[in-house]
Length: 383
Ligand SMILES: [Ca+2]
Image: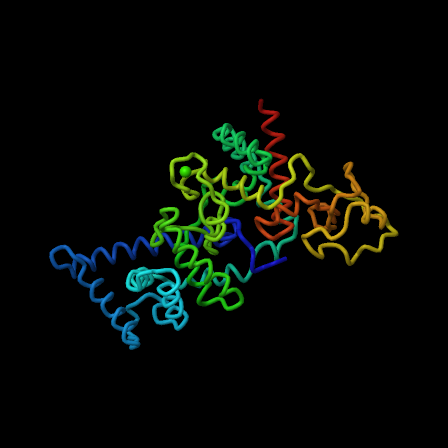
């Protein structure tokens, strides 16, 4: 698993504390808004917020002269040595106006809840049985059908153009954001700054994402001061992080704006494009349940890596027998999952690996796959 390349984080994993965080954040921002409005009124001259002007002036002074005030007036990272380095890079290499950047970061806040959330991703702490229960729910299946019905034409077009089954695109958006209803409550700039400046294990990865995010203002019209997303800075219906937004997002309704935050049509096309680029094999299976022979000596092969290193025939000859008809030449990886009814053995095929390119987790890919199957089945029954 290439942690540094994890492109997405299901928004649901901004919960379990997310609902708490959401309400905390909302109430905090509400009170902040009220306070700042009051402050702005109290300090305004001819309707202009004098306090903000003074604050901005102090920050400019600190950064242009090298003298940093310790008044706590600026954002949480303005005085961070890494911020100065970022500022210099943005100016020298990306043609940013230094003062515009300082102005933007003067309100950026460190979020401790993000640092807590990223330290315990659900994919690493939960069993398959528990993880499955989060996503394979009656409401996710019912809302999946609703989303599919509402966007039937777009899904059919994307399915044909990119070669991806509609139910896979629906399930991805379902797992990521409950079909757009939970797109994240953190300001992306707060999230990416917190991780870039205060999370050393992946600071360089998130620093790059922060730069990519700033560029989205010009490229995709995203308001970098207000855009919201997950704790890891993933945005919109499909929870694309900024670099994925740059590489894979498409303007699928041709309105000249690539908008994954508000536009489900662009989101569907972008998910389809993402899967196509990552090598989805149209019409091929995703995974198969398998039985393990008592004589098998495969113990060490289970869950070793996501990328298939052997093929189905290799595993068959060692006693891991696929339940569904599967070609021996198919690349495969062996998985052992702790389900609700005991241990489950699976062979993940090429398309299973492709799903893990969206989120590098076998639990995630299995949840997407099983939800997609349930939605398709229920939709068929409903017709
Ligand atoms: Ca569009």
